[in-house]
Each structure stands twice: as structure tokens, then as C-alpha cells.
Image (cartoon, rainbow, N blue to C red; front, side):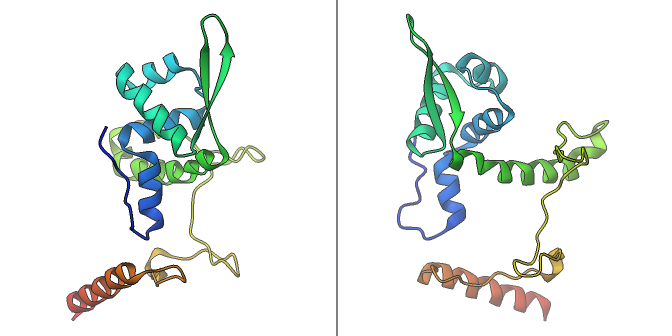
Length: 170
């Protein structure tokens, strides 16, 4: 398996992508968050080969997204559980589900997954909210700025992107 680390890159998105590894890592995390924990269930659901699944589970465990627990001896058998950090991937999956539904719903009878508020039974969606007021923020009112941890490369990206957007709006 090729290294997918983004060594030296100061970028939170790159950190998450590096921890997930590749599309197989994302599909495995999807299934773990949906409650599948056994190797055979993960293999059947994802369609990954044994080598691919085994390699990705080891990587996800190394990256702190998955915990392996023995549930049987003679022979030893393990289940795989998302860690607290792994459960955070649920936010990313929810966003991907919403985007996928927007892209593909016309071709389907309805969404393949419903994200539901267990307390009310209503559908739940991810939305941007103002961190102070908790008011919804429209996508057209979103801007990206350098944070305290930004390095020179991140500042360059932001400046370059801002200049390109300004040039297009002229």
C-alpha cells in the first residue's frame, strides 16, 4: 500500500485524508459507523479483497480510528470498533451522504440512508452555524481565513485563491 501521509503539510483536511488512507478506508469506516464489526461482514459489504481489507484495517488501527478486540479464542477472532476519533468520521460521512443525495436523488426512489434525530424521529442534516450565535450561515456568506495554526503554505493557498476569485469577479 502506498503511503498517503501528507508529511509536513499543515492542513486539517489532509490530516483526516491521511488517517483514512483511501476510498477503502472510508468505506470501512462507513460500515463500522453503521455497526458492522466483524471481518467477514466488512469484506462482504465493501467488496474488498482479503489483502486490501486486512491492510486497511491495520492502517486505520495504526491511525487511531479503529480498535481491534478479540471476541473468540481457538481460533482467535477479532471485531473492529470505531474509536472516539473514528466516530468523528461520522460527520464527514453525513456530509458525503447529503452531497450524494443531492447529486443522485433524481435517479433513485429516495435516499439510501436517512440520518435521523433519535429523540424526535425527524431527519437531521449537517449545517453551518455561527459559533457564537448558533444562527445558520448561508453558503454564500462563508469565507475561509487563516487560523492561528496556519503556516506559510496555507497562507499562500488562501492568498492565491483569493486573488484568483477576485480576478474572476472583475
